[in-house]
Length: 251
Image (cartoon, rainbow, N blue to C red; front, side, top):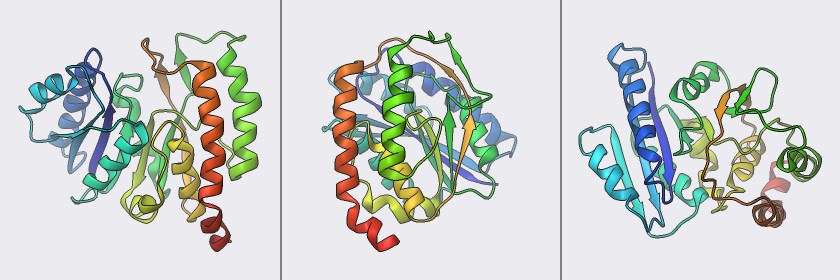
């Protein structure tokens, strides 16, 4: 019997977040009512919103004590998730994770991470490993697909000695002890925080299991291939430099 905390970072998600809250709440509420889990909470971290995301979230969340809302002036997915981690650790949560606000990961597939965690210290969803499904199917000539395979993954292997199918999938789950150990070292405020999170998890000797998932691509992405790609590359080198001393001490 475990307590689960799920963080949902939200930046201008007024059009997409309500179905996510509804589906996640009712899915995990049923598990709690059936005593499959001890309890759960959803932590929505509003970050830099200038639309009515806050109104939507607060309007729905005020009905349910399991839904918590944190409103941040600053934006940044990494900063939002870390803020959610800090809050979740204030309560007796056994597993703490995060999921994107757009319902690309349905709650049943997030729960796969809970079921597969086992003796591991972290479980991450993967869109690209055998057994995973992405809808709609991506074209073989997709620029993002080949950029990821040829450049991005190669660079991550060289810089961080990580070898995974999917670093950026927006569904990840960690045991309490894992986050308690690495939290103070998390610094990335934007999209590269996933890599930093996984790098630190491995750097401290924690094990990670990658779980094939079913992913539903959503419209309205806030990233463009070239702009995000260049920023990501720069931030990867910054992460490597920032944790050089820590890495040397862990050897």
